[in-house]
Length: 276
Image 1 (cartoon, rainbow, N blue to C red):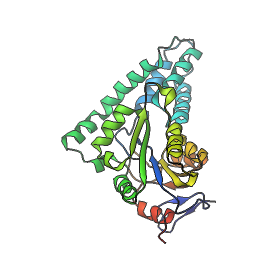
Image 2: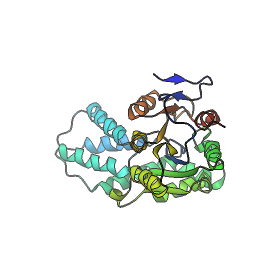
Image 3: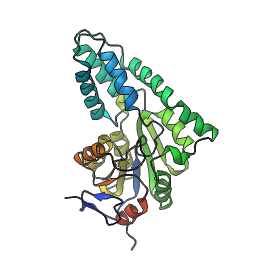
Image 4: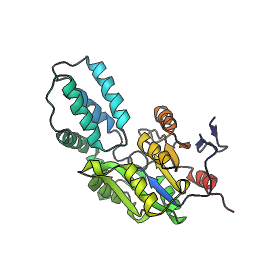
């Protein structure tokens, strides 16, 4: 049974997690730290629905939308190309002739850029501060972990060139020992591979690794590796409170602790790494 801490800053799902063991930390990027791409689902889902509605044997639009929402949710956290592979499969199921998944990925990215270009330009020009484009408290949390001597890594399903650019706009590179994003050779990159590499190269025991993420992929992969998984159930649009759907999905994926954001991260860190 889960319980809320007295300060209500985080929800303990697994009270048996080891404490005082963390040496390495992995962060997801979009939705966990960065809000630059907030609202991406509002671009991807309508795009896919529109494409599927043009197939010969499509269902009603509400039924198509439900199909798309389900498989987008089930692949959130993976590289974007996997969502486009699934789109191509759904087109074929309905009698259509799909393009290569990369074509759909590029179309989606062009549409997404129209939504977020002002955010990117605002950051570059100083009209928008990094604090405005991150999950509340995220920058302070990253700095606190880094200053505690914990080696931090960033792993994202977004193409690496975009992750590197957007992370730089938020001032993150000095705090990370490595930043990883999706590769064109998508079969040779995954968050699971990043987690396994960090563990193997640093001879870690599972609980020495902690991961922060808002998607099921990084939570499941961290638990598979024996690490501690912190789920960020942030309401991205409002930047306040808990997204109930995210929370339920993160718990189902094995999250040890749920946080609405990083505002009270110091409380969590004191719980996980109590001073002697």
